[in-house]
Amino acid sequence: MEAKTLNCPNCGAATSSAASHCAFCESKLATVSCPSCFGMMFIGTRHCPHCGTAAARAEPIAAAPSKCPRCLLDMTAVAIGTTSLRECDQCNGLWVEADALEKICADREQQGAVLGMATPASEHQVSPEFTKKIRYVPCPKCSQLMNRINFARCSGVIVDVCKGHGTWFDAEELRQIIEFIREGGLESARQRDKREIEEARRQLRSEQLAAAGGSNPITQMRDLDNERVAGISSVGGLLKFLLD
Image 1 (cartoon, rainbow, N blue to C red):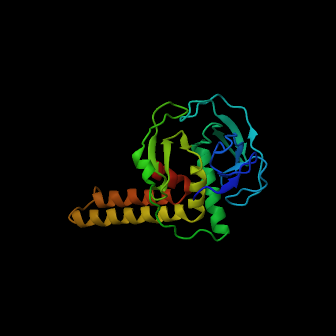
Image 2: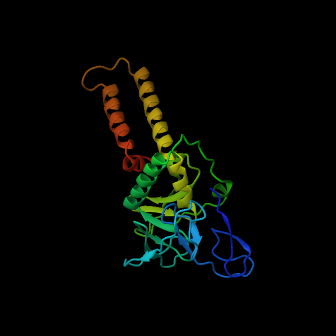
Image 3: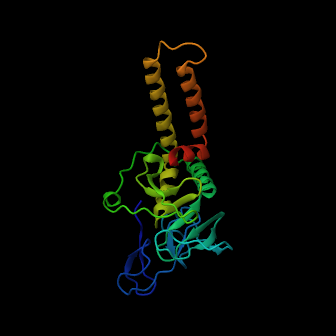
């Protein structure tokens, strides 16, 4: 999930595709998000260096002003492929509203299945840098501080979430999430959560075998668990379960 190394179009020095400026000539590197994996690539690049998808122009769209939660500068509202989101020209972060994120996840999970890429994904460790420097940032919509979570609880990517409004992805984080999903990450999370529900159900049964009748807490728990399992079977239900 690491950023690729490219050459600065101004001086030719090696630089990361996640960098906003060349470390040698200090030229600002004009970048655009890939319409498929949302990785950053230099404007003028014909194909994404991360996934190989043909470059597509990000079209500006009309939207009310909204501040980047990191830089506090106005973000640009753009349509990247079929997805509308906001991006910060300063830090390359992306703000994705809840409905748009659900569609992105559903589309990429389906792509992974069609291409045969979806295999049981192992859990990724959270980078130590996230535990050393914790900074809570405000939601661009309601200005309340967002929660920091490990996406899907096993991706290793810490994102900032405002329940009901959307998710903030620092530079390259959304690309890392897309790779995680295409590798079968959501399905692994789905199966893990089902196992946890089943284990909680078994523990409750063992503790309350004496309960009986219509008010049986075991029956109530079973009905509740069935609803939860049915909910997380869809991408939208799974995301709501994981991001709550």
